[in-house]
Image: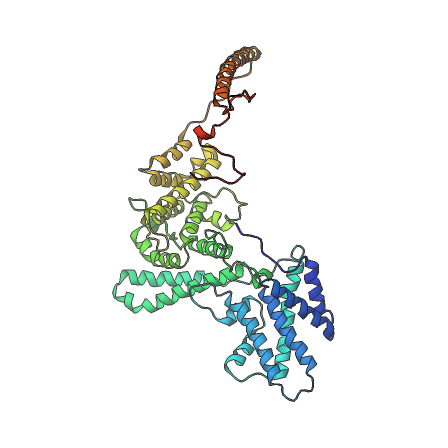
Length: 498
């Protein structure tokens, strides 16, 4: 569970006031000084978002530039402007280098809708000649305009403003098709494996970069500029929501026909151990291993998507898209594609029992993964009802394979095989009198038992009192003896260890 974020302003009205000081009148120097003083005070109180820190830096230079009109040397101003722009671009881009391989600054800036020429100016100011003062002033104005539209307005109108338009994510299918063709060649001819090693490594890196782009596309809002998911959580087990979204998009691409499940039904054959054929696993296992090395939650995510593909029950669930539901439907007949479901189920069994996950090895992880998969299958088939569960042949067979040799899991499967309970008999008028007779018998029995217990408890109460004084205690209660029971009074929430 994420803890609340600490903000320096007491209310959004304070942030709105700072925004008006900055943008209401471009020539109002006094208002800009007020904004600088307020932002500086906030920075002393607590850490502020990178957007506000950049606004403070650029505003300080603008005020300095306005006050120093007619100065003989412009070099200090040029250096101050350049430093503020460089820190703005670097702070935005560096925090979004989320993948195992570095991405270009221009590609991240494009997803942030940051003007490309600011990235070029940052490069020129860092590695080439310092830009002119006029160019740097234009850059400062564009930077402040970008901060207004991408931080201040979304932050002040988070409940009413329309959500930010998610950047288009380049398709992953061409990369997967290229990877698949290369792996088919190298698995058939070992000599070509060395020849195409560099090409395969390049594709794996491109796929990893696609995951990084998907992470960024999952959360390109004003929050990304401040306290976002990049900061570590107190709960280390909580998965980054942006990574979860990116891995789900990746799994959807892998589950399309022609991915983990071949298009041809003849190639969807399953081995005797209910795993995909060796030819299929040889093609895809390097990619799955590579992704699992850099993303520990990938295997679990892929298993959950496979389960959703073979038991697509809740079409309104955010994790189950219409594309996933359509995967288990035969395009020719419109009925359930049993061959697809069997092949997908065999992948689940392989990921649990045959896949050597480099990120989470060990028998404990395998047992946990198997139990979670069984729970998802039992839950999904149970929601389908008795008649609906019978239609999931692949899921039923997978359930038997996963529970084989495990008594604890076998009990879960027995719930689905139990016959439906018979309907209750019709109500008769004589049943009411029968219930009354039984109730009287139970009340009489309970009264006699309470009398016996109260007599026993009264004896205990007298004996257990430290000073042998009689106390009227409720039935079932007794006073503890400090010498005999080792009890002593303590404040609530404090315990003394003997």
